[in-house]
Image (cartoon, rainbow, N blue to C red; front, side, top):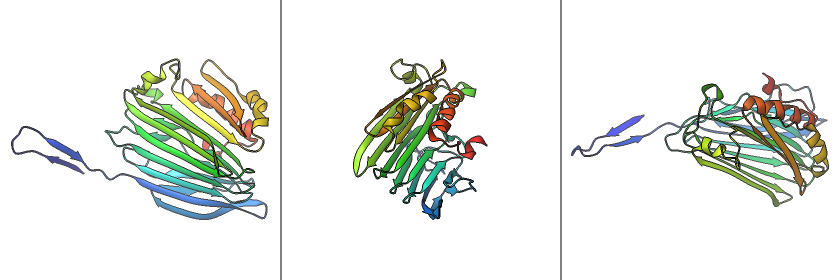
Length: 284
């Protein structure tokens, strides 16, 4: 709805915009039963849905669907996933999530992951694509015991390559907080505000590249797999990648010229390191 007020003195005009924004929430759990992981409780509201297609393996593959068709200014989405003891769940999205331009309000996405003893969770949405003047703040929080395994992969692309889009103004804030055994073990925040394309052009930021991704693996054997991870990584002129490990965690950073270059490097790594194929929706 568009509302315009015109003062009687004609000296000024005040315009206010009132929009119906998308609000969505999905929460579900996965339980291990008789050698297989199966869905537990599922709660959906607003424009968020979760679908669980048939899966040949013993794990559960969940697909998050945003029926709003993207993220716009002032939208708010929340996702909560719980894996019970010994459960294995992979969470993915069917396509890249588009974040459209905003005239001010910030869109928010919050993710809460809870892992039970001996469980495994792979959080693997497809890339987030920011349009010029997009404004997005998202937060991922995870709580897990010492013997659980968590893998998180998030990729973000700044601007539409086909349009040679430049982000002259925008906001992207990404906060990760991981708790293990009741202790905060990982805290990472990336914030880019203003002329994002200019910021990315700086050698100390991204050297002119526009696709960034982080893979974080938290597990009892994470540090021991560092050399294995490095063997799977391939750095090229279009995509640089590097891995490090500390305190029971392994992190891989990707910095690419575009989404195609990013996928050429990240997808083979994800398959090899996880010892599992990519979610089927990634290939559709």
